[in-house]
Amino acid sequence: EDQVTQSPEALRLQEGESSSLNCSYTVSGLRGLFWYRQDPGKGPEFLFTLYSAGEEKEKERLKATLTKKESFLHITAPKPEDSATYLCAVHISGNTPLVFGKGTRLSVIA
Amino acid sequence: GAVVSQHPSRVICKSGTSVKIECRSLDFQATTMFWYRQFPKKSLMLMATSNEGSKATYEQGVEKDKFLINHASLTLSTLTVTSAHPEDSSFYICSARVLRNEQFFGPGTRLTVL
View 1: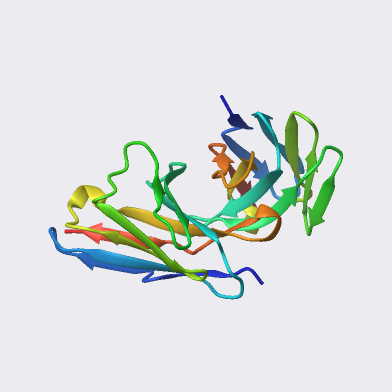
View 2 (view 1 turned 30 degrees about the vertical axis):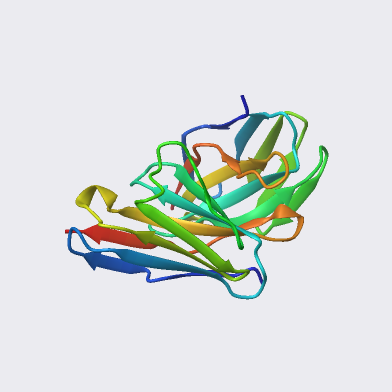
């Protein structure tokens, strides 16, 4: 069964304290791995797509990396405004829906 | 680019009435759109996959007569909650699939049924 697991479920950081969120997957095929940010009461905001092992993408304080089994979302020197739920999802094949992990709730304390 | 809008953002209705939610891709054409439901502090729950010009594919346990989905054009999909009841109160989010299968989400619609 295709599965996406995110860890930790929740993470509390001090402002400036860098860390990483993990997304591990066991799927029959990978067409793309997606990272989203979701704020309370809003739809998920697209961050990155990664297509192949070894690929990396960066945006401001965020950097996403991909291996054959997992992806990491690295947050460098986070700020309180980075507090949100970060969702990982994989696209397996064709027109199938994304398979989502349960998310990591990140809190950054000033 | 890749903006998805939803309308309305919030709706309050009486039990027994029907509510229509629109999902539009503003700057691209989406052959496939998805409808999700989300309860407070819970994960997204896929309700259905909507393909332009064809019938939607519903996930197990989702009543197709209750949640009517129409994808009449490449930029518009609608979800109609028929004969709404308080248990249908939730946050409904649509998304649209675009180039290289990237998927973008709308801002969501908060439905409250009294």
